[in-house]
Amino acid sequence: MGHWVAVTKHVFQRRYSSVDVSIVVIAGSTGIVLIDTGGSPAEADELLGDLNEQFGLPVVAIINTHAHYDHCFGNHRMVERTAAPVYGHHLVGEHFRQYEQPRLSAQQANPLLEPEMQWDNVHLLEPTHPVHKRAVIELDDNCIELLPLAPAHSSTNLVVFLPQQRIWIVGDIVEESALPMYSAGSDTFGWPAALESLVGSMIDDDLIIPGHGSVVDRGFVIQQLELLQHMACSVRQGWIQGLSESEVIRGLTKKTPFSQTAIESAVTQGYKHLSNGRRATCLTSPTTSIPNATTN
Figure (cartoon, helix red, strand yellow):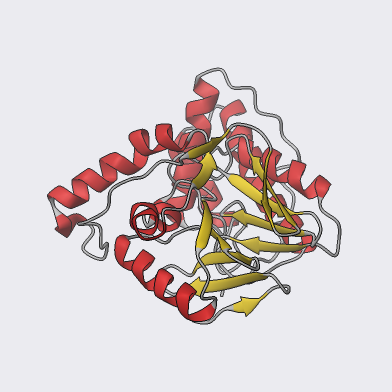
């Protein structure tokens, strides 16, 4: 962490230590495309200083991988300083209103609620270019594909794919330095389905940059997919058996490596969807053994 790593000649990653968030740069001859902006104006200012020192080129476009605070609360400050357009999933505004704005307003009214957050000057900025379907940004000879997903880690996941270099920048639908985190807007059943679709488009030599942690390969993504499938199937099985949420949570706490917070969120979201008539397909048996996962 703390320095730019060249993934390929034109793609760079830097991990910022507050929550080990990945910031990615695609560098062209006259400008750079920035993927994610950090979790506060202060982090955006630090990031912009690092960009100027390393690249010395203007930011010509900003892409948000999703709408959680650590990836996009720096948007407003970054746009103030660069005037760059912001690309993001078309549901970012809806997610902000449902999840991020209430949390932000509460913290700004009483900073003691989350004293570690530097949110006093945060102004939520939605994408200036909302992405409804596959879109392309051209940077020199680089074709940058923007692929909006169905609800997964959040309802706002936007995957960036560089087909010439076979690089995927996937945000938090994959994490390397921690286990996947179920949080605001996560879809217990949609997440493994969306990731399975992506895995089907990947080849073994592809490079995948996660939202947190080091670059991984397709095999690692498949391991995390199996974890997510196991969680979804366990929640569905508990519903079918008539178990309460607390009973399913206790069972998963004993047999999965996920944090208590993640388990509670996955079960609560899953039961909410099932109670609303959601049909959840199980992609694997809930008795499948859980593979080892990196937990740096």
